[in-house]
Length: 255
Image (tube, rainbow, N blue to C red; front, side, top):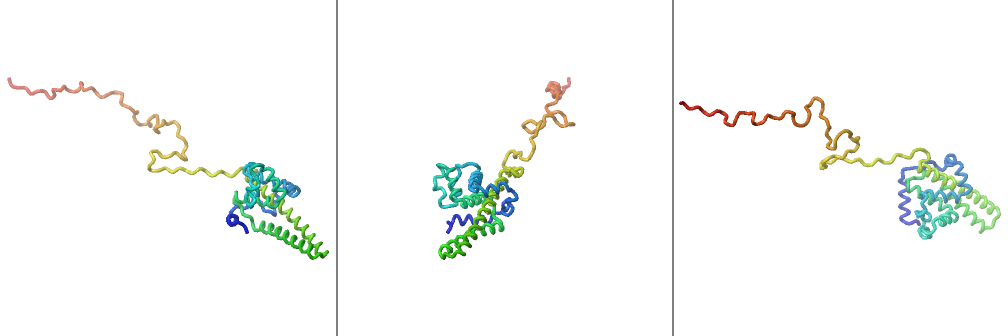
């Protein structure tokens, strides 16, 4: 039984809204050379894909991407390259699935129903082939042994083909992540600043910088049709030009 934490992750993956750039049934068409490489050299492809999924930073490596009980207990920090090589050769299927879960959780990708059917058919066929082999060993009937061998060969062919398509799907998704299909998606714009009433000067967001104006924000020259700024050229007449202080004249007395 899976731990509660893993069950919660599985439930969260059901709510993901993104999908793979290519599904398993079309991954061969999208990148045939890499699919052939993943088919004939599957552990090497798994090693390179995991390293690329970690952005080529092996200091972030954890065995099985942290999805298995052995994760973090295999001395990954001392020699991550050796641990990853051991993982892809000794636990190839788990390494492919771990890389898949890592990409799904990072980009919130869900697996389509068609992909689920293909993966489920691969797993069921492998289990049936294993059961037939055990029964053939116990019973010892030649016809049953031949049937079990044929079924095991078919299960291995399906397993290798599906894993190659799955790794090609991962590679195409990381090509999309790295912008190899065109320009990378536009980044999220920064949040806009809202002017507040308690601010002395509202922020100048979304407006072009004003040129030709002093720091105070006022024009250097007054608008046309208005008198020039400053005081007039002719000052007010001095106080001496007005009548003397003895104004009005004193009254005259009769002689």
